[in-house]
Image (cartoon, rainbow over all chains, first blue to last red; front, side, top):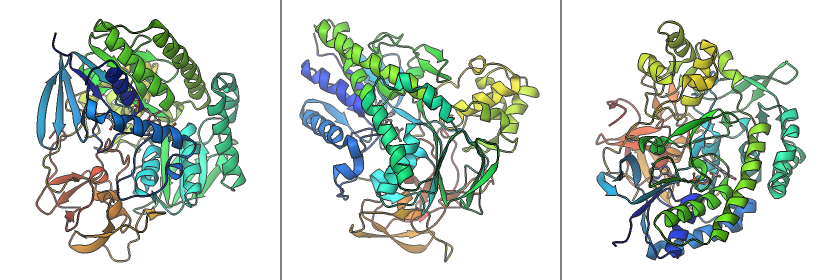
Length: 456
Length: 105
Ligand SMILES: Cc1cc2nc3c(=O)[nH]c(=O)nc-3n(C[C@H](O)[C@H](O)[C@H](O)COP(=O)(O)OP(=O)(O)OC[C@H]3O[C@@H](n4cnc5c(N)ncnc54)[C@H](O)[C@@H]3O)c2cc1C
């Protein structure tokens, strides 16, 4: 029998571990990643012209990061690694790739999708002003470019990344105006039992908060963001604190993020089944414990199925590769999969704790002023989405998209989809799962129209 | 680029990289080798483009190639995603006045 072709999309922790397991079994997977270097989000590498030490880039995670990079670099002679290559469609057993202006349709026997996640955004008036970046973007500026997004940024949203990025900024010598969390402190206390499933992670989180406090960074919990204002750039952030008084934070940039949303478009195009996940209020692809989707031959791992962090992504990547091998009739020791499943279950419990402690502030969507832009691609407002509900009676997101173009723009709903669904659900007075989810569309990102001038 | 406009981004490290000369809307600017185009522009100015829907200036958002809000153009009419394009010596970048293709192209 000819060697089966296994394609992995994503060279983050999940994809890298999947590739390693397949190589252990003597196979040579194709690994595609849109980025010029492997590593994914958390272990993103700096460009070759940069020379900062791993410890300054990855902090406590430096050893894990360099270990994983070295592991993957050692695999390169034995895999078909394709950087700067976008997987833009999946149709039946073919994945469509694009490298610069070259396209290729690659038939596969098994496809492991490990495309990670992007920041989850709740809009607010002024969030399109220059100087407002996604929280992950604020981190990328620092990690990959040694830049701060401003002289005095504020960090707004919720989730562990909020405190981590603020910590990384102050460590790098950037002033931080404030850390503003929409989740109430009480929620985080209630989440402690679940979070203690991973004591070292919990300890790190507490350390960042204590360190920020010791360095004089103001932190507020339970805030209601009102608006970011300024002339052509950010001048201040207005909010209501947990006691109900209005506060003005002077800042020249804002890092904004409310946890992560899984990058699920390719799974959708592959026709994988999705289910509504009530704790995270997102529609996510359905898998078994080992990462098998509802479509034979399509496997899902890491943040792309459910945002559960880097360690979970590594375990899930390896487990998905084991599932591929088992389904190809290769022997996989039951003890190996059993151990991976057990460890993954522990990260899942911790992940639930994070969702509880740093919950997505769905309520804010219903309170957004009508004029607030929800879609930044095509400047579609909360009022227009409400109009789709009242004037056109749009029952769900894809109808709303047809009526008012929400989710139709260049980002394909990555940044407006989840908030838009909350706005629509609130306007219709129905639970958010009743308004469905935006369907993935090919190409999952705009294809480059020319290579000229692009990075080598 | 408007004179006196201050950049959004602040460099906090890696100052020793080689200079790279580019032109932005006809004005000379100096970037650093290894900069993305987005960083090259936003360390010297506060915008990348105007929203074609008339709601003001934009300066990117996600920095990871997902939001597509940092498109700029070369003088030859090629579209570049500033956050994922490495700056190169002699680039001529335009931040306005270019045709806006349809989202799927
Ligand atoms: C911006 C950001 C910053 C983060 N920072 C931290 C942090 O500091 N600490 C922490 O604990 N967690 C962090 N997280 C969470 C962390 O990313 C994850 O826990 C972990 O990286 C997930 O690993 P993964 O392999 O599932 O996905 P990722 O690491 O996200 O890797 C996915 C890879 O797939 C590629 N890809 C996606 N779609 C395609 C496509 N269509 N075609 C080709 N390639 C594609 C991407 O380029 C990427 O390299 C961050 C998340 C984000 C989004």
